[in-house]
Image (cartoon, rainbow, N blue to C red; front, side, top):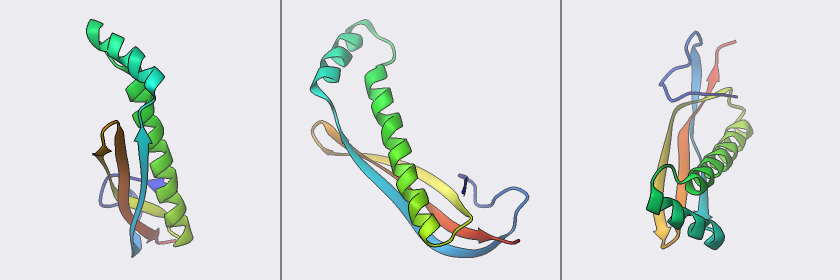
Length: 105
């Protein structure tokens, strides 16, 4: 499955747009990691615990989106975008969406 954030796939022709596909994950913070992150915040620098949490959420959401595109027999997903939002204190949603397409053979 080809996944791009552009409107087209370089070197390929889009035959048909099949529709919007998406994947979303709601991740909650872990109390133990929250404590470590709080200490890290005092000294500055990357808060790796949260970076890892968001990276994991992106992977899971992308996997769900790809599964949805595969059900539509898509060859690629174009114009892919990521969106995050806070759904409650300590929990965020990460959503990825794009257009499933077939490519000319």
